[in-house]
Image (tube, rainbow, N blue to C red; front, side, top):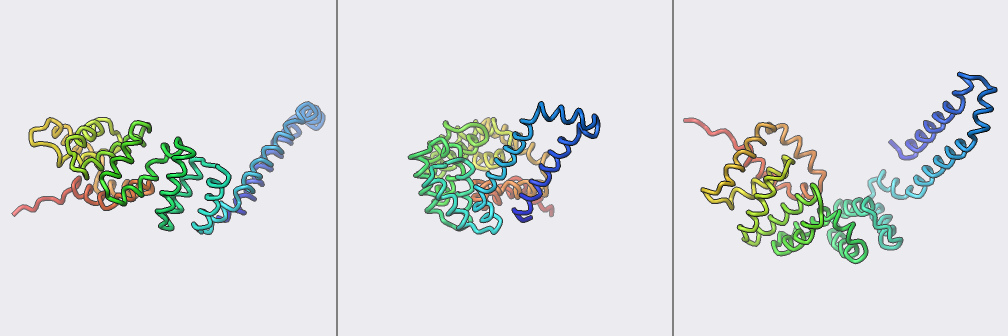
Amino acid sequence: MKIKTIIWMFNIVILFSFLFVFFMPVFFLGWDYSRTFWSANWYLVLLFAAVLALLNGYFRLNWSLFSALERESWNDVAAVLEKRIFERNRRTISNVRILVNSYIVTSRTADIARLETDLRNHAPSVLTKTCLLFGITHLLTNNGEDIERYYGEFREKTRGAVQRWTRWHYAFGLLLLERGDEAKAVLTALLDESRDDLLTAFTGFLLEPVLGAEDPERTVLAAKTGELRERNSPARWKQMTDRRKNEIHVLVLSRLLQDIEAWLFPPPTKTP
């Protein structure tokens, strides 16, 4: 739907709602009471007008961005957001997320690194909250030292799901550096904490090769993978992973995700 149409519909709905509220005292109580009510509450009309003006002002200020998004002109989207971030210092999480995604669509990975440097200097808290987005440039290098250093920086600064994924990527970097014992400790703790089926599968896949035959963690891993298979059929798993690919840090690991799916749902053994 065209953005202009959405804005017009928005204004019509809001205006109709206000008129309904405005005339409701007339319908139920008559004109005399209505005049008395609105003479005492006239400021509500001004409040409504102010809210409507603010919302339309928001659309107007963001018109260039909305129209570029509607046209899917990602270079124009990037140009608008670069001006906001680098010239007007509006380094908000939403601006940063959209700009990074526009860089990804247009394959401008060098610009992602430039934006990361800018946030390090001017808005480190925003970089921390969006560290999984910026991790794409580090993952694509497949350089264990770079991956370990980058995610190691954020694994204690982040919280919740972002922290758990950051720790997984950190362990991935450790494995690339052949530091299996350190990776094992990180992954074992993560396997116990994770309530996200996708993260649990990613964790188990990395953990299994570094476990010894007699390690007690094997029992935990077997139980976790059994639970995953009970909750997810192959078809349901594919639906879930396809949906999660809108998360950049998952999308960039699509090839690994294929290996994980084969590990989690091995083909049935043929009987002679």
